[in-house]
Length: 346
Image 1 (cartoon, rainbow, N blue to C red):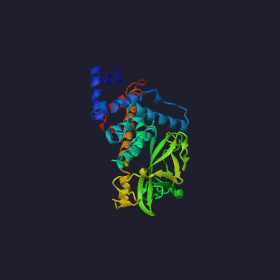
Image 2: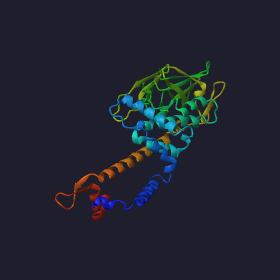
Image 3: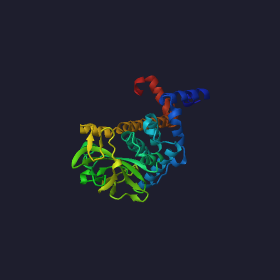
Image 4: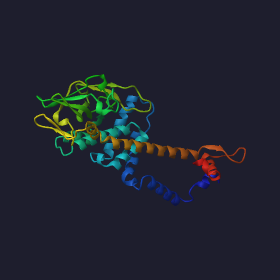
């Protein structure tokens, strides 16, 4: 009997118990309630490897996979409020397609979550939320600009209130204000975005607020929306682009002020938050859980990498400690090392 065989559990029962204990430890006893259906969904042939795809083809496949998970798992508007479930979705989706991860995270957390949070109590946003709940439109967050990076408080994209029509006119005033780099590059997929823009009323700058903006439908980009696709990124197929707006008119109801203020029927803006930076941070509340989702995905990838490395270590042969021609699994050599010199495995 080899050393590898000697290290295996003696009975199937012992192996099953050990596996159960490990699963409970890693998933805090919530594998069945939060993770099991996600793991099963990824066994669908849609998630099989597809070698040879172009970046554009891989990007379209990622959107198709995101819709499959949405429909198969019946994910909906409750997901932005269920943080543990959202973290689980991020953990599993990244393992087979790293592009599906941001598509789902942006849709549920950054777009739908922002509308639910800053449009709470309103009954005039139901049609937008229905599109996102059904994923008939993909949700986006469009915030950062070419000239300012993540300094959202300094952005220049402006939404000017038109008192005559009761609409906002969304415009990119210069090259610095182009949005960089939302996933707007595939233009024949319906997309609905939360866009951060500077609200201007009666010539006065009232600060940065979220606005709901339709970016594209099945016929392509909406009038006044212009996108330049960015170059390909090895291993990452998200359709990032540089996006600008040319006097796009959007309904008054698309302004999401939340508790930061309100636009009166007379067209006067009344602010509840005086500090502009505080106002911006409120508008970006959903970024924090989004970062945690990405951290969870990294932990999941590290967990999978550890599993692959350990499993391979029991198959990869290396020179045995004794005997000129004998071989043994690498893991067995590592175990001998840890027993003789405990410090070498730390």
